[in-house]
Length: 444
Image 1 (cartoon, rainbow, N blue to C red):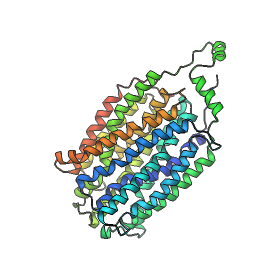
Image 2: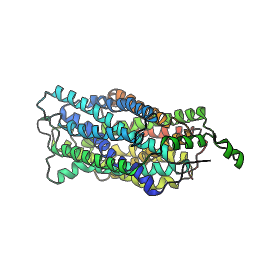
Image 3: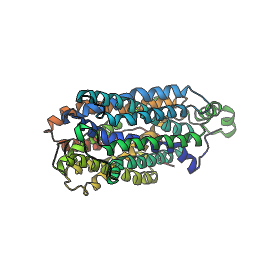
Image 4: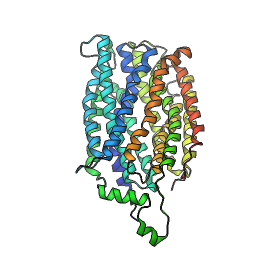
């Protein structure tokens, strides 16, 4: 029976290396969107609404990329063309978004321009991001998937680390960090420019190094996974695992419940960390003040610390023999970090809770896709399934963003209380992990 071969570490690395550059772009977006729109004049109670567009676009784009790439084949492969187009579009928009306040527009006009640029940025990032997860599903056998997604998690968080510290780094290099006349600081603009350059270089590396399996070979692997190689089965008398669509859908939905709580929690982190840190540590919510902009830089540092925690924990995750246990423990540790963060008034002490939050992030990037791609092994529609699975990432963010202003007001308009809520959500997600009916929770 023809099964997918074991891949070397370098092959697994090359499949995901472009994710490093894509994640720099995603990190710059995550760490700076609230800062950008607050600087342009947005009210804190309305900040969460600016976060609805990114997951909404992801929910539309990623299933389409999955559906059409399942049916695409070119000399470059079937996933890589979408990756390349998405990366090129992201580079263009990354150069436009931070200039929303520099075009001589009114405050309202600048926000509309920024929203349109954000919509296209997230569309292109999603188009570039999803093929990496699909290529792991296509090219890596079940035994190595946890390792492959852990490598992807490592590269993802390494890219995040770079993207998060860029504004502070450029400030230290002497580039202005002042928000004059409601314009985005130059330190943020240059972060986006350099991030765009790194993104396209990393994607080009993956395009040159990876050769996807041709359609005939993919068909053989899928048939073998479904147990359709009758002659081999008769000769070996070994039953092959058939693709069980009902079981796969059940795992999809059960993991999706966990995803809901996790991604809602992180939406509130991205939205309200800047205001929380500015208030708790710099004691200001005046977006024109140097203190607020310094807090914005420090948020990048904290998210970088989170990324370091994720990188380190990504190395630990493959050591767990039980995927569900690794997933649940990681989420609880992250929940503790969220519950601790609002009580830290020292900027350096904040490193500890954000390291803990990074533990949850590492698991969120690796464990759900391990569970779902294992369940869909043997399906000819792996890309479509993963594209639809992205809705379990997008829907909770949309719901959380839509309710953010209401919940903030209900919790006393204290942005730190939104981080406490995030901690509770992660713990609830950890409990839900144990209800996933996965047939293979052991990591080989």
